[in-house]
Image (tube, rainbow, N blue to C red; front, top):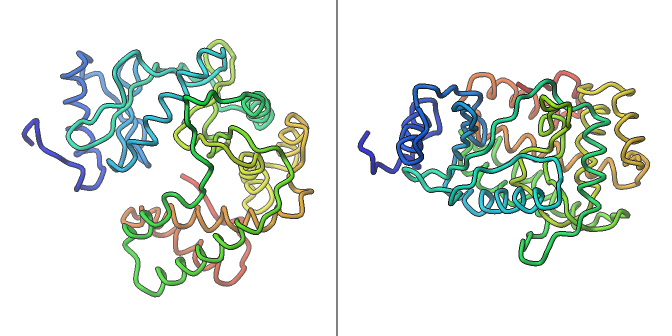
Length: 299
């Protein structure tokens, strides 16, 4: 593939991401042979020595990458424990992909639910400066893109579009009770780790926005209640550490329904993967029939 080739119209795969990574290494002086692919989701994530390189699935994610880097740099000025971007002119556009580079963290463990709650409580106490220009939280910002790229038949697509339409209506009708302010946007224990010094760190800030704090508290409750991904004790540690139990809020079940639909739409865009296709069929069946969600899984 020539060095000026735009790969953004091709699926993000180890091959296409690897080509982008080699060009990133050429531009920055990093050593490509030292690279190790960690995972591919919305981003292909590589460890290159002391650096983590994130290559976005779509060029449309450039504004989110700019926001993520800006938020991380702001948090550093507040001595908040979060991912640290390299001191480069970034994000970069490389072969049509959005790329960001971060200081690698020596992860000793995933954060506990209590540690996540403590991070969120501190994060929610911050006031974002006007120059950060955080957008209003819009949980549906990417859903049309997900569905447009989903390899589904029209019946399944029509069903999901209908559920999204209902979710938008429900979102507009919710009466939030916690103060509006800065939110992480995708707060779960998968986006927080404990580093080598024993410090919990908040990661993946690309969804940062201003909005109702309930959105950041939802996933831990949902993961415990409906999926069994957390125990009741783990959820109690979360709500005790944060100081609020979202399950007692009257809008909780409707907000949980919204999140389930969005989780399913996100997965639908990845249904060309064998695991994702099987998981998607399971989720669609549960949404249609009201079946138990405890067999939902995450890779």
